[in-house]
Length: 450
Ligand code: ZN
Image 1 (tube, protein in one colour):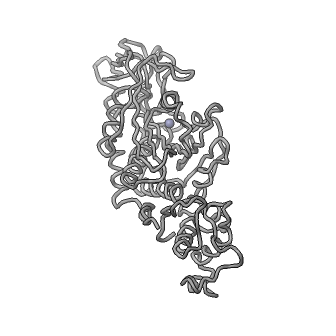
Image 2 (cartoon, helix red, strand yellow):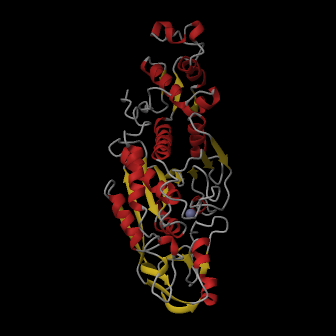
Image 3 (cartoon, protein in one colour):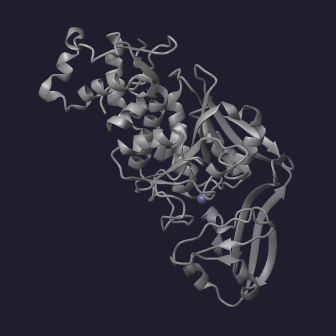
């Protein structure tokens, strides 16, 4: 039997939470957008722990119905009064400028400037996050309190930005597996100073990738770090010929806040990844809920577009738009915690562990219950201990392993955790009571506790 190499996989390495939080802290000040140097710097920092392959897709490249836009970079921006005092300053937060603003250098009255100013509708001291990707515009975001300070005078308004031919940048990291089938993990990287909405996803997926290095998995694991929408569309268009390798996929984002998990199902709602994630959440420690697919949200809607129909679900904690700090300056370093990042990583590891360990086995002694005592398994099911999960799992596996169900199917049918069922299968395999259809070895399921 193959050694249980994924045995320890469900438990993140010590200090993972701290390490992920530190990565969020480090990436927080960078001004990311859908293109530009902030994205490159972000990917370079991620590359220090997992060596990403960086792809540059030139401006003007058609990607399905879209075209790669000009590259946006920004050096400085401010609104200053007549004394030169900066009342709104990009140097203090990259959220202060509407992302993709065209360059501006002007003197404007408050009346003329006012339509360009965006405030948070509810919270007086929060700065909203706004973008203007696909129509040429400019603007500033500020708090209601800052707006209240502006007097009816002339202001110097500067956005020292460039919008020029360049490229869209994304990063990819692959953990090669035994076969050609792939598991895709995707996260968006286009948001500026927002912690839960995009830095948490970057932190968890980069650490997940690192955990898988050297495990020689069954699947090939492909991690894509790309800007939202245009990034996933560009990746899909450039990989169209090999999309049929993707057996399972997950968009991971918003995984550092204090909320429980939300899983958004794939377009069909019946993909294997739906069953796997829901099983892991059901047997996890945190609250969770499931959403049906909808063509709104993050990049799952690109993977689930009708021409592609890839089995890609989405894992978040509190979903987009469902927490007050969403898309505002309050999505900051206080909103995410090392503990929640760590628990999100553990959940991703558990998902991988099920994907790796699940398989279809056949009872070699299917006529009547095999005599377990003779094989040293009797005490594991003896009488009054039979309610123990592991012992029940032996009986369930023997009864259900008829070649039509996988271990995960059996676990769901029995109401047991996958790992109890996989451990029972491993015991039965060692006694010769299970076989595979095709002489394949027993998959290393994650053993060792539920
Ligand atoms: Zn967002």
